[in-house]
Image 1 (cartoon, rainbow, N blue to C red):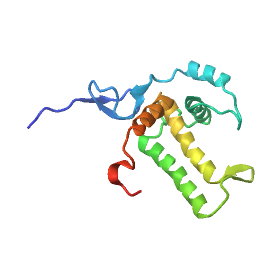
Image 2 (cartoon, one colour; image 1 turned 120 degrees about the vertical axis):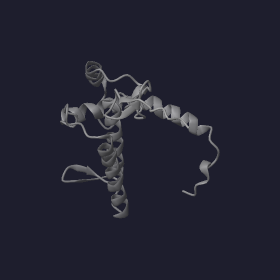
Image 3 (cartoon, rainbow, N blue to C red; image 1 turned 90 degrees about the vertical axis):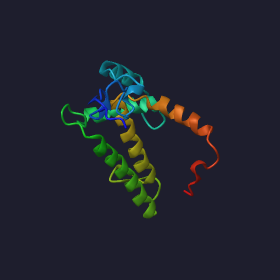
Image 4 (cartoon, helix red, strand yellow; image 1 turned 180 degrees about the vertical axis):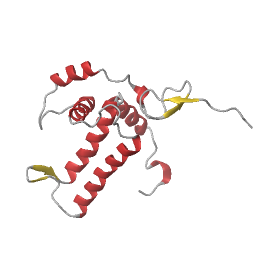
Length: 162
């Protein structure tokens, strides 16, 4: 039996706790260095904006985080916990389910505001991208890495029905 205590310290990427010497607490923050605001602002200036922009994943991360910062969602000392952020992501998926259950159009406008199943899914992606931008997670690289892993998995791996 191992009676040694594991030493812990704060994660440099989020509010979590990591083992001393671990790259991060599991938040994924170590996958990319924390964002440099000047670089984000410079990159933002080069993005094509609008519905035909075809942004890359990492451009979306930069865009989502920049808008969230400008709207006050990441004020120093007022950051949401990881649980709160995930709950907000989940709430967007719940709203998508309600749009689906209500048999509403996939996309529509109500009083000038975009609504519908596709819009709620987009809201969830935007929240995920914003979090990744705030904590320097290279979401594009992580998605490519996970997709490459998934390609090598067995058909309907895991034995689950859904």
